[in-house]
Length: 268
Image (tube, rainbow, N blue to C red; front, side):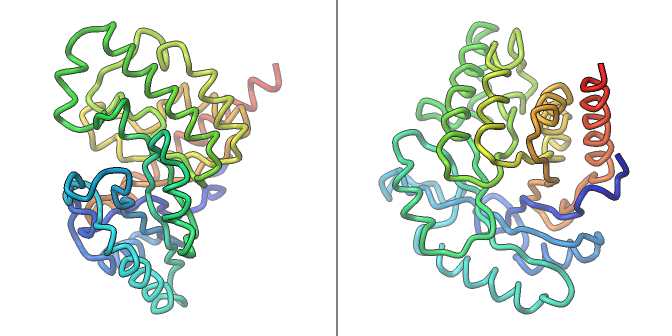
């Protein structure tokens, strides 16, 4: 597959509005233009609607009353840059089991072009934050337990019908903690659920900036997803304008390799 067959759009970016990134939304649009991208999706984190107001962390997501202003700003930039680049209104929405209807009601009034589905919270704790590291360090059995719980939540997210693109599919590897077997034995189940969902998955360079030093998803998982016919889009998970389109050439090479492997498998 030629690299040119992969759309040069960045489908996952965050701005200062989410509390843990830097730069204004217009800075990300300008960075996408400078990188020669055809499109950029602005996808700040959904408000933490599932928690009582006094427990919502402003360093993790925008406030609930900021959501309409966020939508208006991205739509205005879409109009402003209409003839130069496609600016897409998106949002990264956490999947929280038991709160599916609440998320549906929250998103419904707004004209999102894409809703990213992510699993950061497992059994009520933030699985990918620095404070999670001691739990992973408890040993291989705990690592497997975390991966299994994550896989089960991810499968539910895929089946929920709430999302267009599933993000950083193997996120628990962020700090380098790997299970004894892929997804603690649930990788085939994850791939089956994602393929049945109709969702795309992102191939994200965000992991290349993390301690694990590997794109999301890992090459073997990417090959399985491609072989199952799952659509793949590119993303950076940028948290600064300079990260927009980060190492997209490497991502395109990874995807080309996965597709070649899939074609070879079908020819056997």
